[in-house]
Length: 144
Ligand code: RB5
Image (cartoon, rainbow, N blue to C red; front, side, top):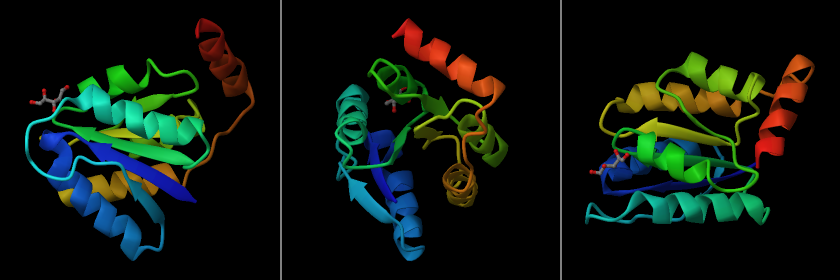
């Protein structure tokens, strides 16, 4: 399992924390930046993480900006990407089980580090349920 992770400046601190958490659990992490709190534009980092998924270099993605909103909007413009803004573990579980989300988006300015770790755990340890959800996810692809 390889996870591509990226953030803008507002998500940088939480990205570093989540990255450390994942590494401590033995998850391989591909950090595409940003690498400091210098101001940057979130679409650039959303695009980079999505490209890693689309090329097969990573299986899942994590994106963090201040609210998670900009990263969600940007990532969902990429073909094949289903990015879900999740502020709680249950949202992350359902994003995988029902929506087959492949990118977890979190809010660096709204979430504490522990909550973010729990949310990441829920995302990585949940799986698409298929069934009636398969049809709905297919319809998402048709919109693309
Ligand atoms: C940056 O100030 C902020 O706008 C960004 O991190 C994000 O919250 C945008 O949606």
